[in-house]
Length: 159
Length: 81
Image (cartoon, rainbow over all chains, first blue to last red; front, side, top):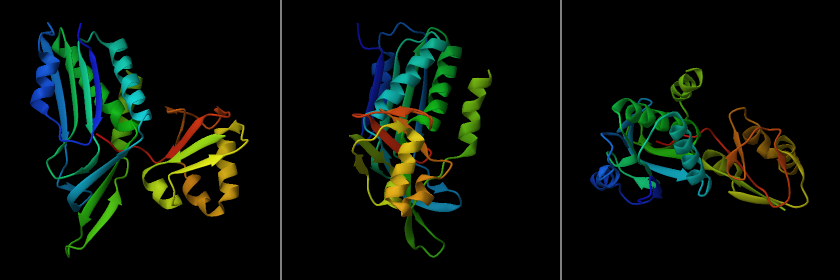
C-alpha cells in the first residue's frame, strides 16, 4: 500500500510531471485534479523581479496535514499531494503543487480548491518580493495578505 | 522556559527571530504583554490586530494558556501558495 498523503516543503524546483505520475499511477481513481501556482511577474502595480519564501518549519507540515485531513472528511479522496517550494525563486518558477485523486471529478475539483483556499489563509508561508520602481530602482517588500483570499475561505464555512 | 518565535516582516521589525522567557505561565495575550513590557519598542509591531499567534505549532487564540516547555510563535498574515 503506497502512502496516500504526500507533503513536502523543498528548496529545489518542483517536478510537476513526476508529481502527477506518482499521484495518478495505479491509484484506481478516475479523476485527478491538479493546481500549480507560479511566480508572477507583477503584483500590486509593480514589476516583480524575484521572490523569496519563508516558512515555519514544523508548523508548516502539521498545518498542511490538518488541511488534508479536513478535506478527506468532506470528500472521498484517493491520494493527495501538496508540495510547496521555499527559498529564492525566479519568475515562472512553480511555487506550489496540489494534486488530488478521487473516483469522481466533482470531489477532485472541490478538494483541490478547498486545499488551496485553506493553504492561502493558514499555512505559515510568507512571500517577500524583489521589485523595481518606474526608474528601475530595486527594493524588497513583504507581500500583504489579500482580503479576497480570506473571502474565498469564508465560502467553505458558510456552505 | 517558553520558546517564542517571530517570522517574516515581524522578525525583521523586532530584529530577532527567537527569544526565550523564563518562568512564564499565563495566556498568550499575557505573554505578548510581558514581551512588550520588556521591549517597549516592540509594542507597535507585536500589538497589531493582524498579528497571528501559534501555540505548539497550531494556530491559537489570545486566551490560550502557555506553560513551561511550550513553543509560541507570532507572525503576520500568511501569503504562501
